Length: 444
Image 1 (tube, rainbow, N blue to C red):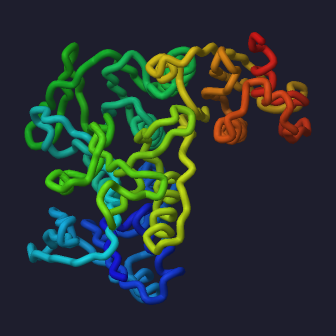
Image 2 (tube, helix red, strand yellow):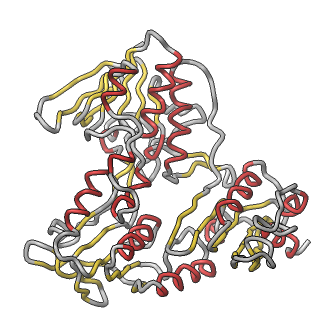
Image 3 (cartoon, one colour):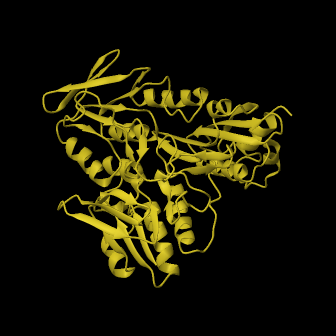
C-alpha cells in the first residue's frame, strides 16, 4: 500500500508511526513544507523567554530518525499545492529548489495544521512584526529582540497572546496587549477573565480593550501600532489574533470543509472522498458536549486524531471519541483552566443552563501555603448534566480541570461530582474538593 501524508508534525507523524508499526509492507511518503519534523509547538514561548535553553529541545524525532530508523521517505521543503482525488495524485513544489513533484497514493492523509491569521494591515511587512507558530518564527523573534527592544505590543488576548505577554515580561520588556473585544481569553466567561486582567495589571501589562488595529508605522522597522483609538510606540509586535487551517490547496477538490476551512471528517478520520483522510488542527473535532463538529486546534487532539487516522488507514478500525474542549495555561503567577462550554457557548446553543461559583482553597485551608482557587461550573437546568467549568488559581487548577474533563466525557451530572472518591490529604486537598464544594452550592 502506498501512503502519502501531507504534514510532518503531530498528526501526520502519529499516523505514520501507526502505519510503520502495523504494516510491514507499507510505502510511506511524508511531505513537509518546512525542514523540521515532529516538535512541540506549545513550548515555543518558553524558548523565547529562555526557560527552555534551545528550540531544538522541542524536537521529538528529527528527519533522519524517521528516514533511517523507521524507513519513512520523509521529505522537507515539499509544499503541496494540488490534490487530484480522481487520479489519486498530489503535486507541488520544492520551496528551496523550485522543482515540481508529483506522488501517487492509495491512501492520503491531510495533516497540514494551521497558520496564524494576519490581516492586510498597512505596514504589516515591516521588520519587527511577528507571528508565532514554528521554530523559525521563534528564532526570528529572538533575533528581533536584539534590536534594542523596550516596548512590545501583543495583538490578541488568546492563549498565544497571553503566553507571549508573560514571556516578554519575563525578559524585562514593557508589554502592551491590544484586544478588539472587552476581555482577554474569550474562552473564559467575563467574570473569570476579570482575574486574568488583575494578574496582567499586577505584572505591568497594559491592557487596551475594544480597539481595532488599523496599520503599522515605521521606516523599515516597526515603530508604532495605529488603532482606531490611539497610536502606540512599539519596538516589536506580535500578532496573535487566531489561526486558519492550511487547506487552500484543497479548494478545487470535492473534499468537504466547514466555514473555517477545516476538513470535515467522521469518527474514523475519513473525509467524504474515498481514500482521503484528515487529522489534527486542519480537521474538525467532534465535541461531546455540543454533540456536533467543532474546531479547537490543540496538540493533544492532533496526536490522538493522527494515531486514529493511521490505524484506520491500514483498515484496523478505531473511532475518535471526541473532545470536551479542555485546555490549561500558565499566565504569570496563575494557572487558567477550562473544559466544556462557557456561558457564551451555552447561550449560542440555546442550552437551558445555570452556573455556580465558589472561592475555595486549593488544599486544606489550615495547611501552610493554601491559596485561593476560583471555581465556576455550568450545568443543564433540565437534567443537571454538567456542561463545563472554569478554574483560576495559583495551584491545583490542572487537577480540577482534568477531573471535570473526565466527568464531561462520561456525561455526568453536577451532583455526581459529590459522590466521586477523590484523593485527600492536607498538603493536597481538603476533605471536600473545590469542585465538590461548588456542586454542593448549586440549586437542586
